[in-house]
Structures are given as C-alpha cells and as structure tokens.
Image 1 (cartoon, rainbow, N blue to C red):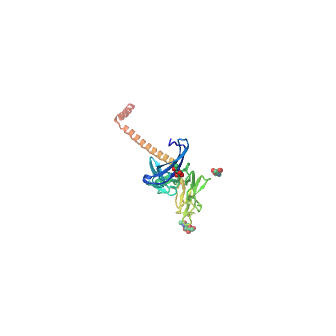
Image 2: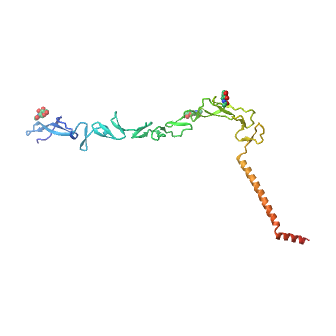
Image 3: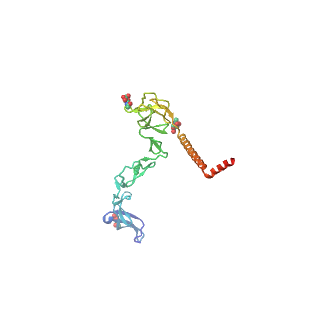
Length: 296
Ligand SMILES: *[C@@H]1O[C@H](CO)[C@@H](O)[C@H](O)[C@H]1NC(C)=O
Ligand SMILES: *[C@@H]1O[C@H](CO)[C@@H](O)[C@H](O)[C@H]1NC(C)=O
Ligand SMILES: *[C@@H]1O[C@H](CO)[C@@H](O)[C@H](O)[C@H]1NC(C)=O
C-alpha cells in the first residue's frame, strides 16, 4: 500500500559523477503520491542512486562505450569523439570519419579502399590500370581520334575532324601543294616532286630531258617509270622508255610454258635414243635379214 504508485514526478539531481569504467552515478529523488489509510493522498520523497553511462558514452553490450561519429567506420573509437583510423585510412577533419587514402589522383573515380580507385560511370582505368582516366566510348573511335568523354571521340592533337565529324585528318600548315598531308605537318610529295626542307614544300624535280609517257622525274634528275611500268630493255642513250611490267600471272605462265617445252624436248631425245637402241637388238636384225631374205 505504501508504495502504491499513483502518479509521479521526477526530480533528477546530479550529485556525483565517477568516470571509473565510464559509468557515472547520480542520486535520483522521486516524489510519489502515496495513499493514506483514510484514502487521502500524500506526497512522499524517495531517494536512490542510479548508474548510467557518462556523457559521451553509450550503453553497448552492458558496457559504456565511447561515442564517435557513425561509430567510427574503418577505425576505432577510443574516446568520445576520438576516432583512431585503421592503416590506410586518414581522419577527414570535416566529417570526422576515417577515409581511405590513395597516393594517386583517382581522376574520374573515387578512392574507395586504400590505394584503390573506383571509377565513375563511363570511365575506366587507363594505361596505368590503377587510375580512372580513360573515358569509355561504346562505339570505337575512328582512326586518329580518342575517347575524351563518355561516348565522345575527339580528333588527336594535330588532326581535325572532316566529313561531318566522321573522320579525322592530319593538319599541315602549308596545305601540302603538290603533295598530300600524311601526318601533322608532314607532306608526302606527288610523283615528280620532292620535299625542299628549307621551303618546307614539295618542289618539282628537274630532269634534263623530258620524261616519257608513264615516266616521271626523280629527285636525282633521272627519269623513272610509274608503278606497273619498268625501264624498257630497248632504252638506249639518255632517253628513257617505259614499258608495261608483265603481270605476275603472265610471268608464271611464260615460265611454265618454257619448262614444258624443255621437258618435251628432253622426252623426245630419250624416246629417240631408245628406238635407236632397239635397232641393234640381234633378234630384230635377224628379222630384218629374214625379211630381206624372203624378199630375195
Ligand atoms: C520532497 O522534495 C521536495 C523537493 O526536493 C520538497 O520541496 C518537499 O518538501 C519534499 N517533501 C517531503 C515530504 O519530504
Ligand atoms: C551531319 O551530321 C548531322 C548530325 O549528325 C546531320 O544532321 C547532317 O545531316 C549531317 N550532314 C551531312 C552533310 O551529312
Ligand atoms: C630549296 O629551295 C631553295 C629556294 O628556292 C633553293 O635555294 C634550294 O636549293 C632548294 N633545295 C633543294 C635541296 O632543292
């Protein structure tokens, strides 16, 4: 009856705080309304000691553990708000959380584990194979272009895009008159022209005599024949003549025919020799004689 609780008020007064094992104690005064024998209510004060985790600690498995931001992932919470990071992690001052450390710049990625970059979508590891600095293009880029952003190819340095951005071609500042631009600032001269490196342009070669049909003037001042033609065997004197080079198949055919001819001649000689030998066989001679004899 005495402790029949009807209603209570709580007054909490800190009297004592001990940090042993991070437990604190406090004295708690509670005022209850207790019913008297005659049915009237009377407030009664009760005092008791109460144990609780000190400030900065929380109850964890029956012990008081220190409190840290997010419970100190990748580290150990050693005191309230004091996180000691695992190896490979550093405490980020702002967030007070242990973050992995990468000695390299992850580029288009983030350091997700110590010394490990996790690439953002659309990017992958480049040549170093640890840093995310290579964009991914689903369609392979054209010649002389590289994937610079996800699904975006761009012409390499020294090249420009042509044909409505479908191709890249090298840029030659001179424009390569009498030649073609084959690499950035590198012209290949047309036949009959050679590079004059002081002028940085293709200059016409000079031959004393005009070159024949299917011929052109070489840089050394002599005429040569264009592809598919050779200098004729009948060339005499300084004037060059160009004749069509025999196609490969035709050459093979000629060789084949020549071989067949030689083979046939050899066979004929052998056959001839054998038939002559037969003439000297005694039986045959006799036969011949007989024939002659009967004829007589
Ligand atoms: C109970 O405690 C309160 C406040 O601490 C006090 O004002 C009141 O007089 C006390 N009552 C009794 C019955 O001790
Ligand atoms: C160039 O490309 C754009 C978009 O891809 C297209 O609309 C346009 O018709 C193309 N022009 C030519 C000349 O191909
Ligand atoms: C290049 O051109 C310059 C100027 O025309 C000329 O003097 C020089 O001889 C040329 N060099 C060659 C290798 O032809």
